[in-house]
Length: 446
Ligand code: ADP
Ligand code: MG
Image (tube, rainbow, N blue to C red; front, side, top):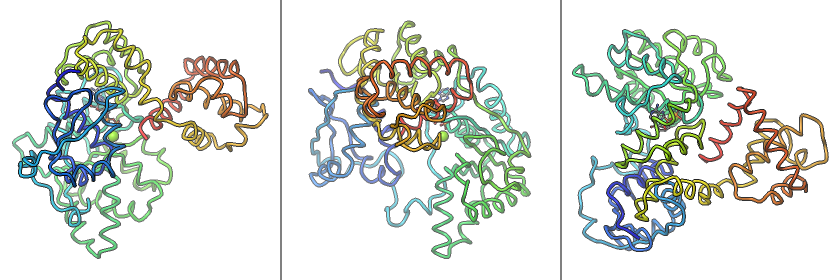
């Protein structure tokens, strides 16, 4: 096997970041490096034996998944102790101790350096949201306030709203930019209530010149936090500060969000991001390949753009796996290699279990697992059962027989029929497509 290419560790680290909390990453991964000459497996250099044992016992699953996603299937991971690393300065500002920070006192989350306007590919599906974001970046609080961007998982919401943050930070006007995933806002609030530090909580949020709350739909069912956010919103709005929100659905369709909040969300501009069309997907593949320092031939671009339709995060994952696998094995990233990596990306596929699929489907359709496995042929049960079969075909390595067995001992032709039926329905029905795409994205993300 070849030398690991420059950037391999960065890609793996990006994937690890998605799987562990920021403080954990700071504590355990910032000093880790990839050995220059990895042999048959990737060797992670760590500062001490204790460190190695800790990673093995606490983070092995995250590391292996990250390597699978960033580099390719069937790549082993080993460790080497390099005590010189212990004194190496961290590459980013030194993290504060976990106990102190606990993710709660942090003034917003760090931005992903790659989520810039320059790296964002514009197409018909996101043109409006992109233009609105540019307008806001150029004239915060003047163009549209609040800016509310919504769309399904992996459509580029976080990328776009962080691009506004980057642009504001780069501009000469000094604005205090606060980017906060909604969950962090919730945690912050709960922590402040528990510790009697509401005053400093309020001060922190109400000082922002630009407040960006990502995935605001997480406020659903959180009445007290909604109340608090309502006041934060009003204070900022009245002081002419820019507010940007992202969500998985339109303002009025977030369940159990108070009307007075959802109506405020509509005061400014609401922009939706749709699934990208084929040409945009191809352009994104090219862009990502370029970002990861590798060109890929047109037929591979098309292969990738055709094989992943909705979720751009999955599309990006495919690009990374193809490039990573090519660089690690010293082969050209051609269509054959892409088919090999994606067609049988067993690592990723078996990550989803039958049980998770059944759980997701029963939740979405409100049926019981026993119904799915029963003999019932009513439409209310047949459809979700077929969805299970379809998802299992797409997301797991189970054979037709195994899938049939999980669904009440049905034979393989029933599973084939279900898959065809669902595929036909997906072509016809946009709403249904959306539901299925969401489930797929959620299942492959979990
Ligand atoms: P969301 O927040 O909507 O779930 P993200 O912003 O996290 O989606 O996007 C998922 C991935 O897809 C990110 O890595 C992002 O860079 C990439 N992405 C999404 N849209 C685009 C785009 N138009 N151009 C380039 N990359 C994109
Ligand atoms: Mg997001």
